[in-house]
Amino acid sequence: MSNIENRFVTYYTPLLNSFCKELTEKMPADAFHGIPHPFIPAWGTRYELSTIKMAIIGKETRGWDPCLPEYISAVQNGKWDLLSDIREFQNLDYVDWNKGHRYTFWGFVMYFLAALYGVKNWEVLKQRNFPNILNSFLWANASAIECWNSEGIPEGTDITAHQHAREAAVKLNDYQHIQRLFAPDVAIIMCSIGECNLFLRNITKTLVSNKNNVRVWKTERGIIFNMPHPNNMRWNNGADFYAQTIRDGLIEHGLFQPLKEFMDCDKDAEKILEVFFSRCNDSAKNTKEAVAFIATELRKQQATMTVRMLCNILNELGYRTVYGSKYLAGRGSYKMVSSAWHYYQEHLNQSDTAESIALAFTKPNGDYAYWDY
Image 1: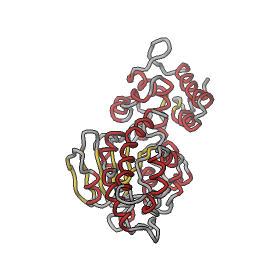
Image 2: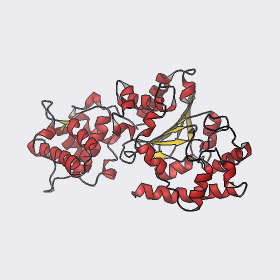
Image 3: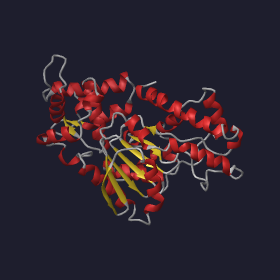
Image 4: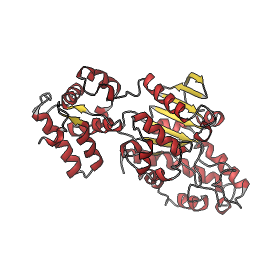
């Protein structure tokens, strides 16, 4: 398991054991038939490597299989794989869950991500294009157990058992878990004011804006937005408004920088470093990893960068050649890019990252730099 997977399992195992223990102290496990097991956060494979760590949070998830009797038995016998739901999410299965229009939860998520990163036709994300974007965020819900009138609760479910499950899940419905474990820079919470208030009850925050059905808080780490669920957005300003509000807020608070405006202007390298690539050193141990990190962020916005500018950024971040010297634009730097491409394409078999490297960096005449080797 990776470091984040180990931390996740260590953190949530006692919480879920406690949840199951509380239930079985009130009713036999079989009494909870029909109630889906609790939802806990899932993160994309690119979340830790993203320059902006973003949590997108809904109200609840319907029909989260398996149901509680099977789940309780597996948890109490130490046989439940806490990472199974996360793998399903990381496989991008969510793209097919309700991929219709932008007033469904997942439809709006894909629509917003496309708007944020400048993908003109958001519906291409439904075909799993732009996997670096689709795998760049954390998914959570304000309610771990869905409400009684949800379509995911079948006929014949015991209403008392459901009430016990909802009560026991309150300890899981807490943003502090996400803050401690994942430290997101921004959270976008799409649910009612009351549900959001309960979810945020245990964190320190300062309200900085409350208008047009959008509340914004500042925290030590970043910012939190609260707005209506996508099902209600059409009656309150529309999806365009909320997507643009989030994007503008991220720019205002220095958490996002549109890239295409100055990709070929070396004079703006310092600005990009400060706003956009400040976490490269934390994620990249060497030049190849730094090139991959920068390329991935560029391609989220379908942007390109001259190799000369890439060298400036690498030098400013402290990366050096094998000889300990700074990088200089020219054939040597083109070889550095092509070497990174070969490493991810042929050694690690990470074709998506290799493709990002291939498309992100250019020569002064616009040709792709990775071909020059």
